[in-house]
Structures are given as structure tokens and as C-alpha cells.
Length: 211
Image (cartoon, rainbow, N blue to C red; front, top):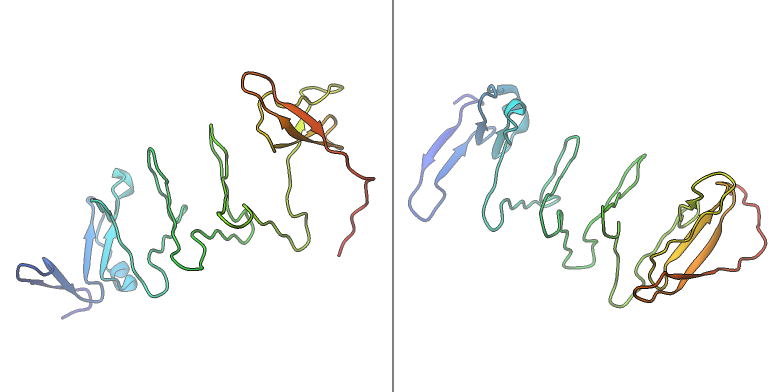
């Protein structure tokens, strides 16, 4: 049997419906995608699914309570592409990572870009919490541990306004000239009334230096 050939076996009830044996066990192509024997040889997978860009056809589609289950000794699911893994949903989490021991539920790493980007149209961009520990820990080898982007003045020679809406404990950094800034803490947030902010008194500025 040639490496590109596959042997299909029919099985009895209660076992797998189709078994494919070969360098790649089963290769499926969404029309009009042409067969790519080189890809089949190089992939060496149990199942190879090839989609078609012109018809937006996926290589593999899974449906049911759990659409796809991936298990591996190193990685359960590995995604490669312009976007490696993408999750979409209407009312729940797009991607939900769970660790049942001491590992992290989700890890984001990058060589030159941000490790994680979080954004929202109408809710908080990032929410972190813990039952027994601090909500977040930030560290940096050479830079500041955390950065608050200042709210800038609307026009030159004007004063940057404090947010009308706020929640107790929120911090706001304002800058009138994009060169210097000041820090405020929300200390009063009554329903139906503008939030009240108190300036955080800081010490004298100190020049930074390279380490």
C-alpha cells in the first residue's frame, strides 16, 4: 500500500464507524479544494481536514454539547494561523480556560507584542479576582509595574475633566499638557449624583535612571 493510500475498515455496532490507516489516516477536503498529497504526507495525522477559502468552508467542524475534544500529552489543541485560536459566543465566554491543579487557566505570551490584550465595548476591559489573594500582581524587570494612561484635556490651555461617573476605589490620572499629570481617587459615588474625587497627594518628583 502506498503512503498516500488509506485503508478503510467497517466496524461492528458499538465501535468506531470508520477507521482509516495510513501516513494520514483520513483526509477530508471541502470542495472545491484540490487534494494535496504532499500535505497529507507532511501532516502525518489521524485526521486531516482541509477547508476552502473561496467558500469560507472550515477544514473540520464539530457540533454537539462539546463540538471538539482535543487530548495530548503536551497540548490538547494547537492552533496556528493569523489567529491561532478564536472563540465566539453570544452570551458566555469566548474562550474558557480551566486548570484543575496549580497551573494557570489561561497563559498569554508574546515576543514583541503584548502578552494579553483585553477590550470591551461597554464593560470593563479586564476583570481579575481571587477568593483569598490579591486580585492582580504586576511586575517588570526594567519598567514600571503598572501604567495608567492619563485622560487628556479636550483642547490646549484647558483643564482635563474628571469622569462624571465613577465607582469607589477607582483611580483617575489627568493631564492638561500631555507632559505632567495628577492622580485622583474616587471617594464618593452616590447613585444619581456625579462622582466625587480626591487628589492623591504625592511627594517631590524623583528622576529615574537606567539599571
